[in-house]
Amino acid sequence: MRAFAQLLDRLILTPQRNGKLTLLKDYFAATPDPERGLALAVITGGLNLPSAKPAMLRELIQTRMDPVLFALSYDYVGDLAETISLAWPEKAEAEEDSPNLPNSELHLSDIVETLLTTSRRETPALVEAWLDCSDSSVRYALLKLLTGGLRVGVSARLAKTALAQLGACDVDEIEEVWHGLEPPYETLFAWVEGKGPRPENDNPAPFRPAMLAHPIQDDDFDKLDAADFGAEFKWDGIRVQASAGFLPDGSLKRALYSRTGEDIARAFPDLMEALDVDMTLDGELLVLIDGRVQPFNVLQQRLNRKTVSAKMMHAYPAHIRAYDLLFLNGTDLRSLPFSERRKRLESAIADLSSTSIDLSPLLSPGSWDTVATVRQNPADHGAGVDADAVEGLMLKRWDSTYVPGRPKGPWFKWKRDPLSVDAVLMYAQRGHGKRSSFYSDYTFGVWRGDELVPVGKAYFGFTDAELKEIDRFVRNNTINRFGPVREVTHSRDTGLVLEVAFEGLNRSTRHKSGVAMRFPRIARLRWDKPPSEADRIESLEALLPREDSV
Image (cartoon, rainbow, N blue to C red; front, side):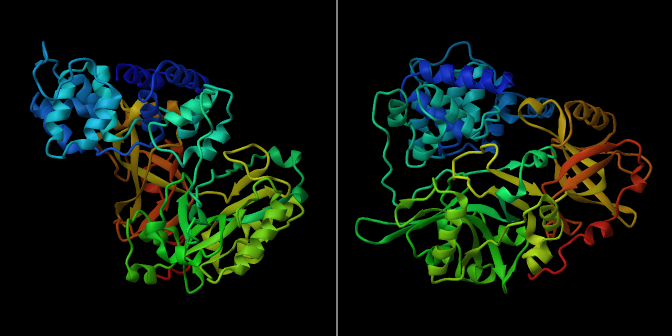
């Protein structure tokens, strides 16, 4: 556990990508099974442990230190795991006969095995014993393991890249076999190191790693020929992969995967019934009512559910708008050019018995001027009444094969220009990880009459220098405190105006303002503008979709 704790510490303090890769690769090389496999699972989010609730951890620390002192410490540090790991009082000697304490150093594998077999009622005493026999570094790693939020700046893709560098293996090959494996990945490590065969996946409907696009830049247009690309609408839904394949008994197994490979089929039995052909397709999960694509907040009614009722399926009918075809009748099509895959997709969709899966329109613009026109006015170029649900365009080379990851060149995305609003900072909260010492999560509002009403929350978009400026403003202008949240001055004459960029707007009954932003971020600090000149709620209401069907 100490080696894993040291790895986390170093990853937090190493901003460079190559530095993180070296740390991970060296750890995998020096650490035996199953420790390294479990560490890989923790970092990639593949380890499902009974989580320790923050309330339980707060109760534990408050038995060891004054609650007021803990509250002040937590407010200053900003991260629960870090606060407890630093404030936990170390015992002079551990009780050797304690049934909850190991006779030697804690091991990650022992912790995982114990957590999986311990009841919720027994967990607090167990965690308390572990904290007692650990130093601050190990306590921090243990608490991050329990709470499930590492925040060490390492994506799952980066961890797999480090694993690939452990041997003569390509990261895309690891992606291909990854979703058929379970921690601690001993067969995977053996294959990568040349000590065993490639792991086999006998799932007839497996997840295939998704291909992603780069945002197109201004200078890309001069280097690229528009005639080499097809253009698709980028729909405002959830990217999914629908897969079906035959089991040995002749029955058809169906699955629906998120972009990261999580099987969400149980929440969408209506779509699974529509998938009656041996295929794997790439598409967008939407909700269609009376033939119209609904706003994203309507789709959210169907997301993150373990089960779904017939009433819910009837009220919010799920739909897939297909972009690409990866497998058909057991044949891998990913090495074919996009133009050929598209032809086969059109034929495969025509063979489906349900209309719950259809094709996303494909355009052949021919020139960048035409592409720009389509992007600005999708309604007149195939999107029709669904134009409000179009985020932008996907540009795909006709000759592109389907490869995992985000290769530069074959696919680009050109999103529509973001909307923007001038809003007033109302509340601020400390961030996490390297931002735990700064107030970096901001709630902002616009005017409704003489009152500011919150319309969104953002925590990125600003530079490090701007972060320090806002943090200074928050500290110097706090007028109220609500736990970790600070209320700042926001009158008509005094306050901080933020230019907020966002991708879309929907009606919301959960917010006092009645609206909810999609992907808000801080675009600019408007020190030059008094709060009284910030936007009004009527400006946002004018941006709402022309008609909500629900």
